Image 1: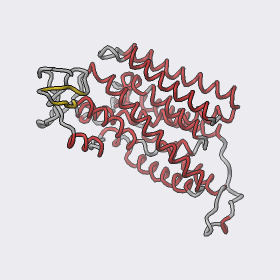
Image 2 (image 1 turned 45 degrees about the horizontal axis):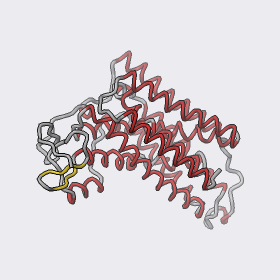
Image 3 (image 1 turned 180 degrees about the vertical axis):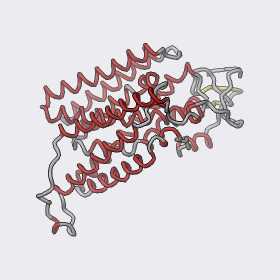
Image 4 (image 1 turned 60 degrees about the vertical axis):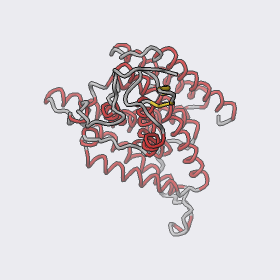
Length: 353
């Protein structure tokens, strides 16, 4: 399943889907309607479901279950990242008709960066089994942090520029506002970038920083790099459309953090148990595997993920619907910003070169 041919076909398939998305869906700048976004979200969910079923038929129930468990985990953690996207789009004051394009390019960059993280993680796990301990305890720490913060994490998240965006601002001359859908223009004989390129870099790089828990989490469900990559790819490819579907509902998911903390804690425990099964640390059990450590089957992982995330979302919608309680609003609005040299300006003359 991990042959070069399979990998090549898969990567070409991902590229084809991205090309289709760009040429058909976002080629004409527009603000998608709710119905349009729902249709495309269902399309990408169905695409992932077909791939998962194909995994069942081609590689067996174990691999198929691992894919679905990994996909649901990555998809759930990606929903949490949508709060960050809201803040970034508001911070850069991206015009509504260009948000689709920004999110698409940002997601593609995030997928490339995650691919590098996956390759590094797979190599580390293959060479050193004790890395499972690090991943496991990191997820347990993250789960406790998320549970303590509760809904405050999504409602009060603030955007801080990544190093890549800061470097782009510092070394690349930029326009003082948006120039339509262009990411680079020529003005007064100079080649300049636009804020659209900066926000694309911000979306892609910030997604990786806020998703550092997702790579260890999925390696806790499967040790197959191919499944890790495809689960991430399917979760990210549908993320842009999902943003426009749930944008108005995000603040109602008041208990989502608790569901995510349960999933992260469960996978963290699973990783620690896996590390005990493969133990080679000389100061633990004489460097021998720990035979008494129980094994958690993949189907149980899938069940915990579905119940935890689905239950948190359902309870959130019911409680917020009855009480009117939502996450804090202030960071979900395009608050007035002090003048910024990158501040969007629609009325500037355009000379695209």
